[in-house]
Length: 184
Image (cartoon, rainbow, N blue to C red; front, top):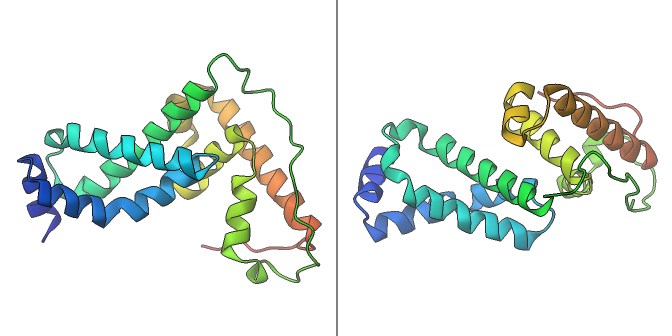
């Protein structure tokens, strides 16, 4: 079934098509939700809320070629809203960088570090840093877009990204990786 046919069926409220859409994108969107939340339970909540919003607003989407990106945008916005809700009244600029670090023997290159370990390193970043890092480096948002979505200044977005990268470099250094290449 093409995205156009699937979109049309979902827009008509066809439960089989909605289930097919859910099954087709749940893993990808869960991965995205997991990057923006601090634990699996929150990620599952965000995923559920994301699909509710997707099905509620499905009729607004006219171009089936934009379906996946539209769904990703909803997931990111839903995760950001959860972050805002959980941090209401907190000064999000005040955070500690005291993080746990697994003690491992020195590793010669970044290629020897498992993807799982890198994801754990990113997930251990303070929320404000992790969210900006993922939005900029993984999702490709600009600092202007990040600032608008998170309701922060563009400079604050840049600062959070800088500190996230600095923290990740320090973590890599602790396991013996001091030189690394930027992979395309």
